[in-house]
Amino acid sequence: MLKKITQVGFIIQCTWVRADVSIWCRRGAISYDSSDQTALYIRMLGDVRVRSQVGFEPERRSSHPYLCIDFRTLHSEYESQPLAAVSAPERRVHRLLSFQRYLHSSRLLRGIPQQIPLHILDEDYTGQARCMLEKVGSWNFDIFLFDRLTNGNSLITLTFHLLNQYGLVELFQLDMVKLWRFLVMVQEDYHSDNPYHNAVHAADVTQAMYCYLREPMLCKSLTSCDILLGLLAAATHDLDHPGVNQLFLIKTDHYLATLYRNTSVLENHHWKSAVGLLRETGLFSHLPAEDSLNMERQLGSLILATDISRQNEYLSKFRTHLDLDDLCLSNASHRHFVLQMALKCADICNPCRPWELSKQWSEKVTEEFFQQGDIEKKHKLEVSPLCDRDTNTVGNIQIGFITYVVEPLFAEWARFSDTRVSQTMLGHLGLNKASWGSLQQEQTPGSEEAEPSTAGTDPEATTAASAQPDGSTATATRGTSSKEIPQGSRES
Image (cartoon, rainbow, N blue to C red; front, side):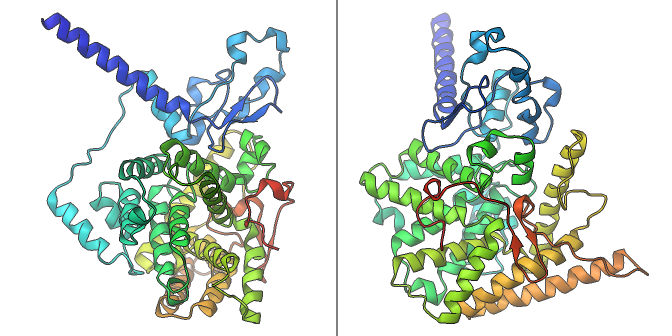
């Protein structure tokens, strides 16, 4: 009898492993045949990380998640040998999942147990988290504390609460199981090892987006569909961010840069990763196909608007609308444009938070800069702007970012929505800039104040944007046709 029970347990365990592996393997979006660099096949709108096993050297694995993808040998192994010399198994198309899920599967196959945090919390913690959610509309909301109180599940808890608070779950007849599974997978696909672009940043942006959605100019005009898309875009806007910027992907000849023709590489990837999760979970499968596709396109349009290399393009259009006073929020395209601007503000609002929160974010984003610089130094690559920890400081980077990127954007947002929240943000912005200036003087006594850096704190700012003293940005040449960008993302 004991033998039979043991056999049954073994079968159940194997079945669970096969099921888990099938979950990892079915979310395919892009297949890459390493024998031909141009053989990029889009199998669905979802996006995955793919590469050949050839050249995957154990010593290249490290604590930094991105190094698990051997970008330097992605093509070189096959370029150096004829097609006939490559065995059939090596020519197989390998379909993997996100960087994060790839790490999980790799650990499982190598017999390394995953460190799965317990999601059962003391009642005191859950009670405090519920109390914080009662004040989720406060601009001083401490997302770091909330993340600790929810045991690292701030993005899931916050997004689910907001969707439910707006009545969107019932209104759109969203399946609770599918919704929860979608939010869990979204949070998992953010890289916890990234100092800045992680699930806590996504939760922070989502909370900021909620504050903007409650502003009088928006809450009276937005439809339920607008609100749903705004919250989902905020939660997924940096999905599966590798912790390096677009410039890094381009100069290492990463397949994503090739796929998206060096244009909004990360933003396209975030969008298609989000669509992949929507389709895998079937969250919108009950809606008419045309409605579901339209929501996916609008989601992409919002996420693509966060490309900071197009900052001046969006800001100029926003300023023109405000000068002409012709924004009509009863017009769907105008509402969508305002949602794009709201998401852009939410994405870079860290300098507008209270000093205690803003300082933490500044240190985190700078550390992510410096980690990329360390990788570039290790592999003898040219160090990207702002990524050399030996020549840059947190304060220097922040002063430049505030001066040339944040202040112009939030000044226009205050013109659009002149409310207490807007004035609070501008107040914090001025105080934080002064605080960084004071710290810079303390760190460099007896010398002139360091010239502020002119690029943004978002690592993606260094991909193609070089901020000028007048606040404009010089963007890289875009080689993508308008057909490859979802409707509404390229505003004339």
